[in-house]
Length: 377
Image (tube, rainbow, N blue to C red; front, side, top):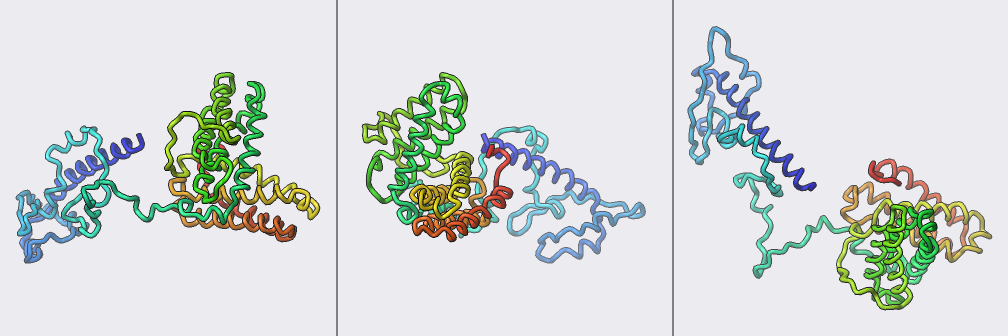
């Protein structure tokens, strides 16, 4: 529908522009003077000159304007009426304006005479009419060393934490209704983590069936959101299937595509809810050296997963992902969390504090600039 609305707007705008040019052109023709000096001012080549805005108002009551309505064909084959190219007119402008037929937008110039052959896409070889995405569409998240960012063990452990929480919240209709928003968030984060596991070069646990966990986590996310028994049952079924897969059992008999893009899986608002909760825990609970020693493993896991989710959000097709400032803020968020994970591993509390403060300083300016009005986060 977005394409249809866009094409419709372009069609109507083009028709309106044609009507406007028709009216303005007619007024210009009527107001043009036939003074011989103006005729002499035309270049010898016959090419029209740019209109002088003041010259359109130069005729007076003593010197009535003589319309120039004759059509002139130049040496290059183009037709002109006065100083206006004939091509700008629709044959029946009012009918064209009323015509609401949708037309597809064409990239680049719509005028073949103005097109630069160098801008034309190369003809496909061997009869293959498929085209690869432009290089500019490459996403920072589509070419990532995920192994350097996180170990599979950390991703599996975070997924287990989510699985256990979902298991608690999907025991009964009452528990589901009470934590329905968290169920939705956990489903989407589980799907996103499974997507990262698919791209990770490591091997282990349910890695070979990660695409099914991605699919089932997304089903939990889609089916939740509304209280009541029907939504509870629709959410519990894919969770139980995901539980089976993550426990080493056989995946469900469903077709799941191997190829995907992160924006097809991850709801950025849901990821941000998970980030907010977990970063809040890291900032508030790991507040002394002794707490760091007690919760070292959890601190490493939380900071690492925050960096992973930040990396996911750099993917193309997320809102503002093509904005360099957006990417710069996310890089600072990712690097800050990686520094926090490194400090936690070394049990270096001052460095952990500094890294947490670094991350915290990216949140507000990023939200103020890039959070969309449609987001409920």
